[in-house]
Image 1 (tube, helix red, strand yellow):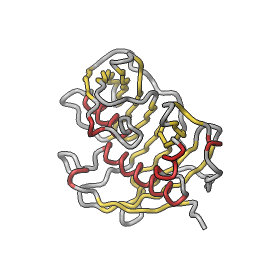
Image 2: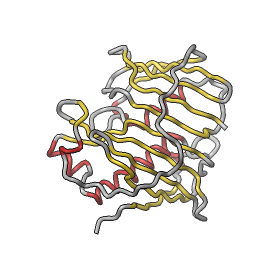
Image 3: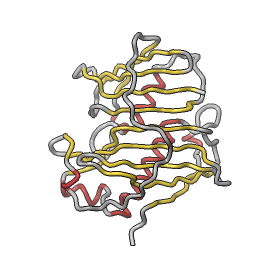
Image 4: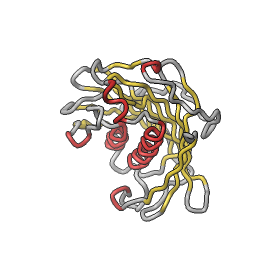
Length: 241
Protein backbone atom coordinates (compact mmCIF):
# COMPACT_ATOMS: atom_id res chain seq x y z
CA UNK A 1 0.00 0.00 0.00
CA UNK A 2 1.29 3.44 -0.90
CA UNK A 3 2.04 5.72 2.02
CA UNK A 4 0.12 8.98 2.26
CA UNK A 5 2.85 10.47 4.41
CA UNK A 6 6.59 10.24 3.75
CA UNK A 7 9.25 10.64 6.43
CA UNK A 8 12.97 11.03 5.89
CA UNK A 9 15.96 12.49 7.69
CA UNK A 10 19.01 14.54 6.76
CA UNK A 11 22.19 15.70 8.43
CA UNK A 12 23.13 19.35 7.94
CA UNK A 13 26.40 19.17 6.00
CA UNK A 14 29.09 21.81 6.20
CA UNK A 15 28.23 22.87 2.63
CA UNK A 16 24.62 23.46 3.79
CA UNK A 17 25.68 25.90 6.53
CA UNK A 18 26.40 29.62 6.40
CA UNK A 19 29.27 31.47 8.09
CA UNK A 20 27.52 31.08 11.46
CA UNK A 21 27.02 27.33 11.05
CA UNK A 22 23.28 27.76 10.43
CA UNK A 23 21.40 25.96 7.67
CA UNK A 24 21.18 28.22 4.62
CA UNK A 25 17.69 28.98 3.31
CA UNK A 26 18.48 27.64 -0.16
CA UNK A 27 19.81 24.41 1.41
CA UNK A 28 16.55 24.10 3.36
CA UNK A 29 14.62 24.44 0.12
CA UNK A 30 16.80 21.73 -1.45
CA UNK A 31 16.02 19.39 1.45
CA UNK A 32 12.29 19.97 1.08
CA UNK A 33 12.56 19.35 -2.65
CA UNK A 34 14.48 16.14 -2.01
CA UNK A 35 11.83 14.87 0.40
CA UNK A 36 9.10 15.69 -2.14
CA UNK A 37 11.04 13.83 -4.84
CA UNK A 38 11.45 10.76 -2.63
CA UNK A 39 7.69 10.70 -2.00
CA UNK A 40 6.96 11.18 -5.72
CA UNK A 41 9.13 8.14 -6.43
CA UNK A 42 7.13 6.06 -3.96
CA UNK A 43 3.89 7.27 -5.57
CA UNK A 44 5.18 6.46 -9.08
CA UNK A 45 5.17 10.04 -10.38
CA UNK A 46 8.84 10.97 -10.17
CA UNK A 47 11.14 12.25 -12.92
CA UNK A 48 11.78 8.80 -14.42
CA UNK A 49 8.07 8.01 -14.59
CA UNK A 50 7.09 11.36 -16.13
CA UNK A 51 9.96 11.84 -18.56
CA UNK A 52 8.51 9.48 -21.25
CA UNK A 53 5.34 11.58 -21.11
CA UNK A 54 7.35 14.80 -21.59
CA UNK A 55 6.18 15.91 -18.16
CA UNK A 56 7.79 17.07 -14.95
CA UNK A 57 6.97 18.77 -11.67
CA UNK A 58 7.62 22.47 -11.12
CA UNK A 59 6.99 24.28 -7.85
CA UNK A 60 5.01 27.51 -8.25
CA UNK A 61 4.60 28.74 -4.67
CA UNK A 62 6.21 28.25 -1.26
CA UNK A 63 5.28 29.56 2.18
CA UNK A 64 7.89 28.60 4.78
CA UNK A 65 7.46 29.34 8.49
CA UNK A 66 10.67 29.17 10.53
CA UNK A 67 10.90 28.71 14.28
CA UNK A 68 14.57 27.78 14.30
CA UNK A 69 17.07 26.86 11.60
CA UNK A 70 19.24 23.83 12.49
CA UNK A 71 22.99 23.97 12.87
CA UNK A 72 25.84 22.24 11.06
CA UNK A 73 26.01 18.58 12.05
CA UNK A 74 22.46 18.50 13.38
CA UNK A 75 20.17 15.72 12.17
CA UNK A 76 16.67 16.77 11.16
CA UNK A 77 13.54 14.89 10.21
CA UNK A 78 11.30 15.92 7.32
CA UNK A 79 7.69 14.79 7.01
CA UNK A 80 5.80 15.53 3.80
CA UNK A 81 2.43 14.77 2.27
CA UNK A 82 0.10 15.91 -0.52
CA UNK A 83 -2.85 17.79 0.96
CA UNK A 84 -5.00 18.84 -1.98
CA UNK A 85 -5.28 18.71 -5.76
CA UNK A 86 -6.84 20.99 -8.39
CA UNK A 87 -7.14 20.85 -12.17
CA UNK A 88 -3.65 22.26 -12.76
CA UNK A 89 -2.03 22.21 -9.31
CA UNK A 90 -1.35 20.02 -6.33
CA UNK A 91 -0.42 21.07 -2.81
CA UNK A 92 2.33 19.59 -0.65
CA UNK A 93 3.04 20.11 3.03
CA UNK A 94 6.28 19.81 4.99
CA UNK A 95 7.17 19.69 8.69
CA UNK A 96 10.80 19.71 9.82
CA UNK A 97 11.68 18.61 13.36
CA UNK A 98 14.89 18.13 15.32
CA UNK A 99 16.04 14.85 16.88
CA UNK A 100 13.81 15.43 19.92
CA UNK A 101 10.70 15.98 17.76
CA UNK A 102 10.55 19.74 18.29
CA UNK A 103 9.19 21.53 15.23
CA UNK A 104 11.73 23.74 13.48
CA UNK A 105 10.09 24.58 10.15
CA UNK A 106 6.70 24.10 8.52
CA UNK A 107 6.01 24.78 4.87
CA UNK A 108 3.20 24.74 2.35
CA UNK A 109 3.80 24.52 -1.39
CA UNK A 110 1.94 24.50 -4.69
CA UNK A 111 3.21 22.38 -7.59
CA UNK A 112 2.17 22.23 -11.23
CA UNK A 113 2.61 19.57 -13.85
CA UNK A 114 4.96 20.94 -16.50
CA UNK A 115 5.11 20.01 -20.18
CA UNK A 116 8.86 19.81 -20.80
CA UNK A 117 8.48 19.90 -24.60
CA UNK A 118 5.94 22.73 -24.89
CA UNK A 119 7.39 24.56 -21.85
CA UNK A 120 3.96 25.23 -20.35
CA UNK A 121 1.69 24.02 -17.55
CA UNK A 122 -0.15 20.74 -18.21
CA UNK A 123 -3.41 19.49 -16.70
CA UNK A 124 -3.27 16.93 -13.90
CA UNK A 125 -5.40 14.58 -16.00
CA UNK A 126 -2.29 13.95 -18.11
CA UNK A 127 -1.22 11.40 -15.49
CA UNK A 128 -3.19 8.68 -13.74
CA UNK A 129 -4.83 9.35 -10.39
CA UNK A 130 -1.72 8.98 -8.27
CA UNK A 131 -2.73 11.16 -5.35
CA UNK A 132 -2.91 9.90 -1.79
CA UNK A 133 -4.17 13.00 -0.01
CA UNK A 134 -3.98 13.86 3.68
CA UNK A 135 -6.50 16.62 4.27
CA UNK A 136 -4.42 18.58 6.75
CA UNK A 137 -2.04 21.52 6.44
CA UNK A 138 1.45 22.01 7.85
CA UNK A 139 0.51 25.46 9.16
CA UNK A 140 -2.20 28.09 8.92
CA UNK A 141 -0.47 30.16 6.23
CA UNK A 142 -2.18 30.68 2.89
CA UNK A 143 -1.00 31.66 -0.57
CA UNK A 144 -1.94 35.33 -0.47
CA UNK A 145 -0.60 37.69 -3.18
CA UNK A 146 2.93 38.89 -2.55
CA UNK A 147 3.95 42.53 -2.33
CA UNK A 148 6.13 44.01 -5.03
CA UNK A 149 8.94 46.39 -3.98
CA UNK A 150 7.70 49.99 -4.09
CA UNK A 151 11.18 51.43 -4.21
CA UNK A 152 14.65 49.91 -4.41
CA UNK A 153 16.84 49.77 -1.31
CA UNK A 154 19.45 47.60 -2.98
CA UNK A 155 19.83 45.39 -6.04
CA UNK A 156 21.95 42.75 -7.72
CA UNK A 157 22.42 41.21 -11.14
CA UNK A 158 22.79 37.43 -11.10
CA UNK A 159 23.60 34.99 -13.86
CA UNK A 160 22.02 31.57 -14.41
CA UNK A 161 25.00 29.22 -14.45
CA UNK A 162 25.08 25.74 -15.93
CA UNK A 163 25.39 24.46 -12.36
CA UNK A 164 22.01 26.04 -11.51
CA UNK A 165 20.07 23.99 -14.07
CA UNK A 166 18.00 21.01 -12.92
CA UNK A 167 16.45 18.00 -14.69
CA UNK A 168 13.69 20.18 -16.14
CA UNK A 169 16.40 22.16 -17.97
CA UNK A 170 15.72 25.41 -16.12
CA UNK A 171 17.07 27.11 -13.00
CA UNK A 172 16.27 25.12 -9.87
CA UNK A 173 13.90 26.75 -7.39
CA UNK A 174 16.48 26.92 -4.58
CA UNK A 175 18.68 29.24 -6.66
CA UNK A 176 16.07 32.01 -6.51
CA UNK A 177 16.66 32.32 -2.76
CA UNK A 178 20.39 32.70 -3.39
CA UNK A 179 19.62 35.52 -5.82
CA UNK A 180 17.27 37.19 -3.32
CA UNK A 181 20.01 37.06 -0.67
CA UNK A 182 22.46 38.66 -3.11
CA UNK A 183 20.16 41.69 -3.36
CA UNK A 184 20.14 42.36 0.40
CA UNK A 185 22.34 45.19 1.73
CA UNK A 186 25.87 44.01 2.55
CA UNK A 187 25.50 44.59 6.30
CA UNK A 188 22.13 42.82 6.50
CA UNK A 189 22.27 39.84 8.88
CA UNK A 190 19.15 38.25 10.28
CA UNK A 191 17.26 34.97 10.49
CA UNK A 192 14.00 34.57 8.54
CA UNK A 193 10.70 34.09 10.31
CA UNK A 194 8.70 33.48 7.14
CA UNK A 195 9.63 33.14 3.46
CA UNK A 196 7.03 33.50 0.71
CA UNK A 197 7.97 32.73 -2.89
CA UNK A 198 5.99 32.91 -6.13
CA UNK A 199 7.77 31.39 -9.13
CA UNK A 200 6.29 33.17 -12.14
CA UNK A 201 8.41 32.22 -15.14
CA UNK A 202 11.18 29.70 -15.73
CA UNK A 203 14.73 30.95 -16.19
CA UNK A 204 16.89 29.26 -18.79
CA UNK A 205 20.67 28.79 -18.84
CA UNK A 206 22.92 31.81 -19.45
CA UNK A 207 20.21 34.30 -18.50
CA UNK A 208 20.92 37.40 -16.43
CA UNK A 209 18.41 38.22 -13.71
CA UNK A 210 18.09 41.61 -12.03
CA UNK A 211 16.96 41.40 -8.41
CA UNK A 212 15.40 44.52 -6.86
CA UNK A 213 15.02 44.66 -3.09
CA UNK A 214 13.09 46.98 -0.80
CA UNK A 215 13.67 46.85 2.97
CA UNK A 216 10.74 47.94 5.16
CA UNK A 217 11.54 47.46 8.84
CA UNK A 218 12.03 43.73 9.40
CA UNK A 219 10.61 42.81 5.99
CA UNK A 220 12.34 42.54 2.62
CA UNK A 221 10.48 42.49 -0.68
CA UNK A 222 12.21 41.16 -3.79
CA UNK A 223 11.28 41.09 -7.44
CA UNK A 224 13.37 39.11 -9.93
CA UNK A 225 13.40 40.32 -13.52
CA UNK A 226 14.52 38.17 -16.45
CA UNK A 227 16.75 40.60 -18.35
CA UNK A 228 16.27 38.69 -21.62
CA UNK A 229 12.48 39.09 -21.59
CA UNK A 230 12.12 42.02 -19.18
CA UNK A 231 9.43 40.01 -17.37
CA UNK A 232 9.17 39.22 -13.69
CA UNK A 233 10.24 35.62 -13.12
CA UNK A 234 9.76 35.46 -9.34
CA UNK A 235 8.59 37.49 -6.37
CA UNK A 236 9.85 36.85 -2.84
CA UNK A 237 8.74 38.35 0.48
CA UNK A 238 10.85 37.59 3.56
CA UNK A 239 9.80 38.49 7.10
CA UNK A 240 12.79 38.52 9.43
CA UNK A 241 13.05 37.76 13.14
